[in-house]
Image (tube, rainbow, N blue to C red; front, side):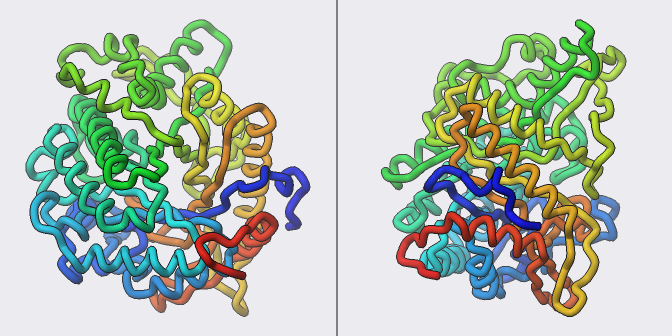
Length: 457
């Protein structure tokens, strides 16, 4: 597929990248002093992950990072968004620091810079050290204090080279999938725990933002959310009210406090005093610490109808206005991408927006003669990049895009049964093959690439 004109005229300086997460690619779970995380415990618990898969080896990036950086260069990436494994740096969550962990990320960052690829570091992508979960996890506000200590260690060591920092990835997932539905680690099933976890996560973000600002004065700091554009299934008053509740649950519960408005009053009333955590006098000020950008992860949109029996929100998800779905069962709806980016810029003082994840899983076949043909993924990217360009035309301050993901990897509770990568990974041999979609994306980025930090092409 050729790069269409609609996505060949992004603004000058637009950033093209790809993203990964530590537990999904690194492997080396028991090596060099790394401690146990909640995903280690969860994935080793029978019945939690498809096929009993774990991240013990994953893509073996811990040992193959040099090869992977070379592949990033071949893809014309201007930036690479990766996460740092907390348990590799502070194995018990608090206390002793593991020098080997810091050295690993130091070498990775140096290699990225030498290749002209800007490092974007995420401090937390769902892999809480297990000892902190044993002490109460994210519902325990002491975990936020521990996170600030960890942020201090990492930024003091790497802040001279990393200038783009993300505190948390998708706190909605950490809280609600981890503490309410139990689909993700740590696997709890309490709605009250989930609401308390959201507060702990947002406190952690605010505290870490302050620490990063002190340690790296020239840093650009943000948080990554997975907001969902919500549409009522019909134009009825009941369905429109249901859509507003779903928006409160998925979006406003995070966006409002982050931008100084406090938690939305309608959601506080809906959840009730027995569920809402204690909010200390300075908490909201901490949470609203000024940031430099908002990261947006987008995969699909929500279409909802009123259902009073479906507690606690009184909402039921209905079908999307399209039959096209990815291997995850998510509706392919690029218009929702445009609408979401425009809405965020209209309703919140986000500053610059970056798409920090966007991509699709499809059932790719193994390479044939060194080629992986994945036309559905290429089409998905083309249409979503066109939707992103439309959002810019409508006034959204979008300044960069990170494809999810750089390579096939451990897809959380789905194990290795879902492939999102621009690069195909043979998990038995660890051989990497750039897919057709990756070659196409390299062509997109190649139109805009400007060498950074001394790198060259």
